[in-house]
Length: 221
Image (cartoon, rainbow, N blue to C red; front, side, top):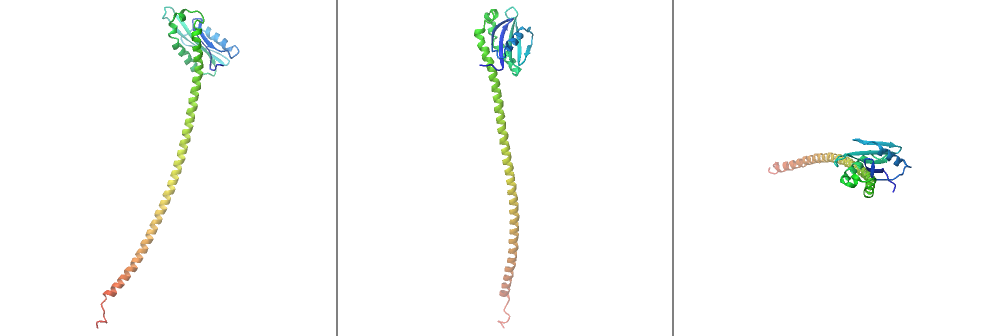
């Protein structure tokens, strides 16, 4: 499998590499940069080297717990496009993972590559996981973007429905006002008609009553 991201990494005690893992996919450039990185003098901070398409980062741990000062080096060469913070995070994890091993006689006094058989597979696994983690983060970002896009579409659709409902409500209100106005007109018309009819009936009643109450003037004579 062709490595992506981190191309090479190593753990050293002083000038001796105890374990390393990696591949050369750049025509010797990875090896050359790794050698250059290992030769840099230890400091209290991060050390950097660069070449075309690649970058090297190294971190040192000064340890005096055994009575003698030991400088542990954690180095990595990665593609230039690979996030520098991820390379540093990888090296920092190696510091914590190897803490119990750095207390053993094998790591303190062993020869070059004394931990190759036991720890190189772990190095390679962690290098591959660093790339998988980036892919996972990118996948989460893409998934989040998709969810956001769906949320936006749903919000727009809801807004359109609300606008349609508002327009429909306005239409119904207008129809209700028109109906109410028409109802008033009909009611007014009926009242007028009833009033006219009442006046006519009243006149007839009055007339009828007049006929009834008017005493006979001729018949009794």
